Length: 475
Image (tube, rainbow, N blue to C red; front, top):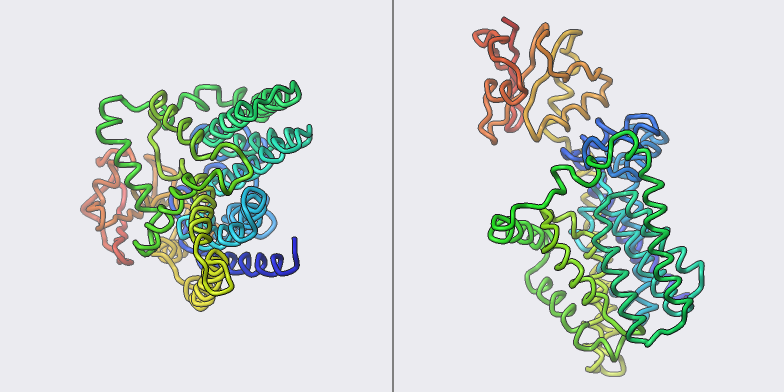
């Protein structure tokens, strides 16, 4: 890598760091809080073997235990593994884009990945999706290297990358299937007859299966295989409902998230660039088959066979590759023009880099304000903690319950305070006026009998934002 390229890449990485820092200490969401409370606080084997809910992204939960153990329990340390994975994706996508296309495409791709709000969203959430994205890019890079060199260690790198993705979330099957279909297509298009190629292709696939089963053996022994591959979150949706409503709604929500905080014209340009990358592919790429084609075919096949609930996070691994394809299409189109002595592609890449630096500089100003901003749930936890006595019980409904548990745990409150039970001294009931909750609906949602509560003693203690706090005595 030339010195100028290295400096520009470091500048892009620094900008991506600043943009992600602004959201690193944001209020903790339900899934983040539940991950910590239910899984990351367990011992190492407990995390590794407990798959009572697919909320446990095992490798990510293990990394959370490590980061919070080293740096304490804070939102920033909770999100550190996802954050670092998101940052690592920036130089990785640069290397991949440079190998597939040109340094100009690589710089524009890295700038887009550093800036894209949807990627920042996943990179600053304490979930395993940025890890899956990172391992997808790493597996793609090793796949390209294996095609070019057919070396054993490149095939092994492909297998290990995919295995780590599976160990994070089983939905790694989405990118893994597309990558192997792409490699098979590449071999066929190259009229690859060498036994070594097919040995590497199918051998690496076998290793992924063996390694993944080995890593999931504690889950299979303790939680059972049904928790892993037959839980309610991964069961196929009924066909008529799926294709008439569920799939359309989930894909629409995904599209909205991907385009959040993006000017419509820019979103259109990126989409057009992706399409143009298909049009100009043969003139520009070092591989025979555009990955988007087999990946799309694989995902369509999977959708028809399994009918997954298609949440936006399932497709997060596609964001960085989409930015690569968009950059490739835009640069190839721009290079057909000239701006004075410079190629238009170089000008486009330079403008994108300048815009990224300015955007990150503006974002840096907001970091202190964002880091000191407190959520309503955290403020309520601070109010409740001094008032709680042994025997008290705190009730609140979804989605405020897990974040409240998290913030109370940070303040040293014992778990028994929010454990639902019939015997209690006093009940603190938090209701969301936004969700039109009442103390009665929160109690029922907690699966407690209203007869246990003397509702005539209900006293409103106060309100923070749209959340009201009530104190109720037992009957």
